[in-house]
Length: 66
Image (tube, rainbow, N blue to C red; front, side, top):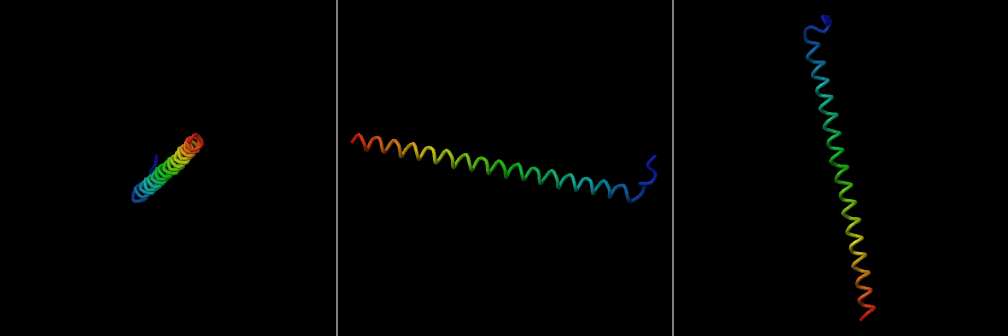
């Protein structure tokens, strides 16, 4: 059946496929981790800004009362 790829050609083709797959999966994993980091950093900054704005609004209210 596959007598054409008998010898040294078959393992190297498989190794190339394995290397390509590992490289691809590693890059996808790194992109996923990096995207998650960016998303969480943005969310953290957003909530920090919201809480500081709420704190400033509270301070304005209390200073108005006093």
